[in-house]
Amino acid sequence: MALQWMILTYVVAAEAAIAILLTLPSPKALKSRFVSLISLALQPSLFVVPFSAFQLLDIYWKNEHRLMCTGEICTASERDRYEKSIYKAQRNVILCLAACLLYWCIYRVCKYYKEIQSIEEVEKRYKDQ
Image (cartoon, rainbow, N blue to C red; front, side):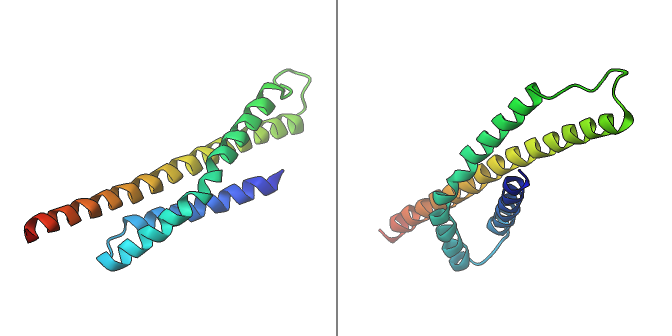
């Protein structure tokens, strides 16, 4: 079960790096090439959203069917194991939400940059006339 979380962790790290690279100031030619490259990669990387949604549903289902360890019957190690599983579930929820949020941010930055380019082209055409 840890493999999907490692994959999601690497995807979130890659998305964070891409978001940082997109928002850093850079020369116009380099930025336009980078944005076009990322735009091409956005559609295939859309798998992150349903994958994260499935993982969130899995976490919800496990949370609903988790054995509670709050009574006097539980030993200290059982209570620690229960709390550790709760912390892991919370971490994984944050990871899923970060993956979706970062994907959306990258998509919007690319879209805004393309809109700015088209507006600049229109402005340039009007100035030339």
